[in-house]
Image (cartoon, rainbow over all chains, first blue to last red; front, side):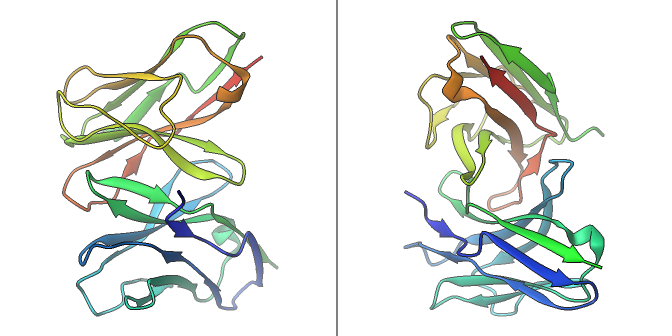
Length: 113
Length: 112
């Protein structure tokens, strides 16, 4: 069963604007890890950002930041100052027992000039 | 330092043929994984190996077998390929608990 849900199959944003991608998940664990991966047309999976559930502070990597709401089991990705190179498929993922990464179905993001 | 390498990059098989996808990592990671990616489905876990000498089924193991040859290598075998196994296959490895997966470049497999 899918335990990571990305409700937006496709999104678009104008260059230089901000966009937020949504992700919700199921878990019964108190500590766990969440990730956002980017998959450009080259197909390579690239780690964008990582969040540890026990840390209250939202993770940030340059133009990428997350809004982690533990009680709501929500983990959204905000991309600021969007660039054409941000056009890609974005996957939310959660670690399960055994270091298994479980992925959502993905959101296609298109940045328009 | 090559990260995770996969061979081959592309493969076309006929129904019933067999083949092995090879994966190797040079980061001294304990855990290795095989995923398949299909349109609209995200990445689904086929098999994983939490450490050398162990393997476990993931979400979609039917039709596949794996071998953790040593700490570096983790192969995926299709004994009798079926059209439903047409997909892109990714190998990944992870070091620390909860650490991010480092992915290989993927193998595009087509079964006719």
